Length: 286
Image 1 (spheres, rainbow, N blue to C red):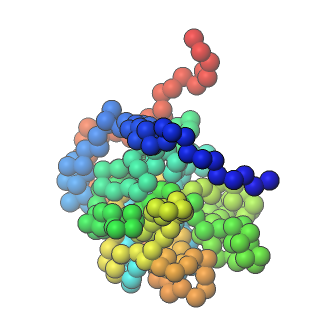
Image 2: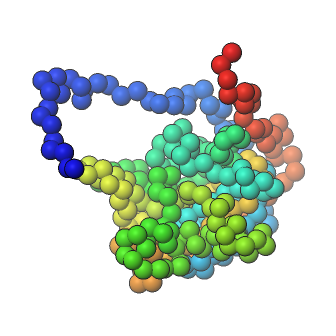
Image 3: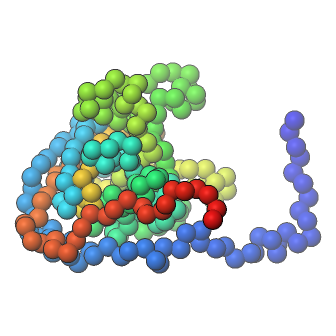
């Protein structure tokens, strides 16, 4: 039964004017030593390179203390990124907590956090050639942790059709191939993503998630410092720059590239990989 809107109470304006409170104040978080990271990056040499073809996904590995750069080599292209602890697929990127700690979109100095019960930094953003973008007149920003990833289930729900080159399916196929596991097993590990280079926000009237053409151009990149040993899986979204649609064979798509850089020995003296979250896991009041 559809309910009619209720009449606003006399104190409606007062209720709306209540000052918001930040849910998770982050001023007690450890501040990443960006100066040390950048000094180490200055000495780093490329050690691995992975090219992700349009509408496909590939896996890559990064050792703790190394850097990885995601680049648009040929033109604007959105990428959907999953991260795992290299030797434990149960520890994976937690987009929701990253969003709660840093905001709807991430940038230089923000960290990508792992899921519960681990909850530790997996990677820190150290460079971003799109940091100039800020927020546009529509409320759009780049590199979001609010979108889930395009997937064949939602596509079928909305269109009644099967389409297999969604980011969810791309990530599933790539992880299955890397780990030598069945697709059905790999799919269970695929999780909400960091939408690299994607420009998104929420409409002011309906609050709906929107996307718009990525501001990235050929040569733009975002770079991360690996806080722990990582297995990454990156999909070159079938929506291309996501300026019109995703889960599509019609959009112009480009490849993405991942380059890993290892700094010289001694450049990270005093740095250590973060430990697991130290909550006791008792889950009971004292």
